[in-house]
Image (cartoon, rainbow, N blue to C red; front, top):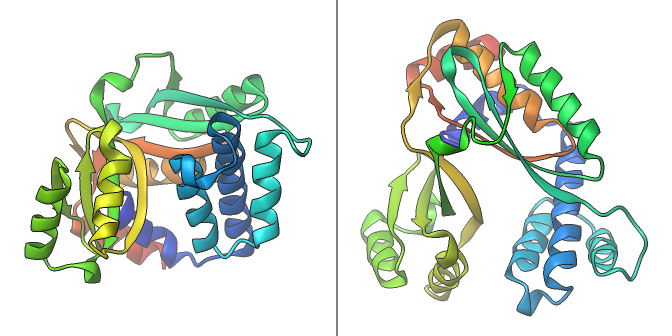
Amino acid sequence: MSGHSKWATIKRKKGATDAARGRAWTKLIREVVTAARIGGGDQNSNPRLRKAVIDCRAQQMPADNIKRAIQRGTGELEGASYDEVLYEGTGPSGTLFLVEGMTDNRNRTVAELRKIFERHNGVLGSSGAAGWAFDRVGVITLEKSAATEDQLMEAVVEAGAEDYRDEGETWGVYTPPNDLDRVTSALEAKKLTIQASKLAYIPKNKKPMTGRDAEVCLNLVEALDEHDDVQNVFADFDLSEEELARIAAGAG
């Protein structure tokens, strides 16, 4: 989401917990199951599954858990089948939100997300309520130490990416959706360490938020992100470094 990497510093102030890791594993397992169901269990021919498995390993998930998730996706083992869903909503001061999820019960998920929006001065809307304000793009994240700006610029041009940005602790490389896997492979071939590679929704225009509205927006993002059925949250609000520092100080 817009600014999600820097907003994550607020959550780090609150400390990592076993419950948080459990939620992360739940989301990763669902992605593995769904990727295997859609594209098969062979990572070599299924880029989405390959990325999902890499993400699982980065979170130190046991290999047996990953294997069982793939087998559930391919039908070798019984298990829940998840539908991919996209919800749209509004938050404080007209901020717009897109919520990607995976669920085995659409009615339950939509009811629970509606309550989360309502508790944070927001409204879960119908299709088209927020999607118009975002572009669908591929986003590749690299550690800052992976390359200097000159090295990254050269690699991005040769790989055929659209743009790159300095995002504080990381570099962000942007591609058209259909070019994500090709550009990711091209950067890896140049020995650049990829932290993450995924499709995302990027706001066309960002809304600066301050004060109580900024805090409520962050709380809404966190509440949505903590729901087991939610995979990704994207929003069009933005916080200045000063505002982030103020909120982080209050969270400490």
